[in-house]
Image (cartoon, rainbow, N blue to C red):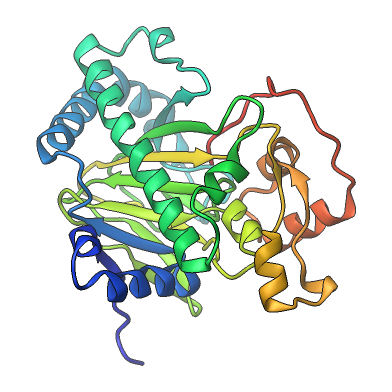
Length: 323
């Protein structure tokens, strides 16, 4: 089988003569990969380097010892078969929209908070730019995706800061088990020295190449629903490694909790889709509530479960996890 070439998008080419061909690469990546990697995306390399340095320092200072005591020393004792109910990761979560929780995290130093806030502002802009590029490729009105994500308080946006420490028995436990992401569009700043992220394509697990200063993009379940399956969310996982701690800063630009998600009518009209092939309509918080219990299972039964229930709008105050 011919080696597959992971899609890498040079964002600078969107401003010149190669815009059309670059848009085609993005379209193909969304249809056939659910993943792509951005270079020249406009986020300062200096800022990215600072965020990476501070994230790794924070892990060493505040989280490494706790992980070693609570997980590393106990999890693999006497284990011979693969562990299927846990992940070999050390994480914390930052909420940005509709309301930040950064001030509530006492072990984050001020310099780290400041740098992360700057980084997140740039990621939010990039997420919204990408959603508009998807709209352009699909023939939807500019801003359609962003509007679709807006509940009564706008979209939700948050970051999962993860570290995947070295594991003495990588065959026994995954860094993160295989899953699709529930939300909208995910922007990942990953370690360029320690690999581990893989996606499932054509029944093969394919490495997502670590590249310095790149941002990896993947599509969540909500974009699959809005595009009625034209674009896909894809199963992915993180393998453990015997050496090196892998940094992962994954930011999730998701619908608001009370946003009603459904396939774009314009796409259904263009495709003349059979009614049985139309994705469900639901409130995002209802989807998340169901997802949290079945995250590491196939996505198709989740969509069927949403079809089977009549979604009733919920309060905008329902908390949204990032996944």
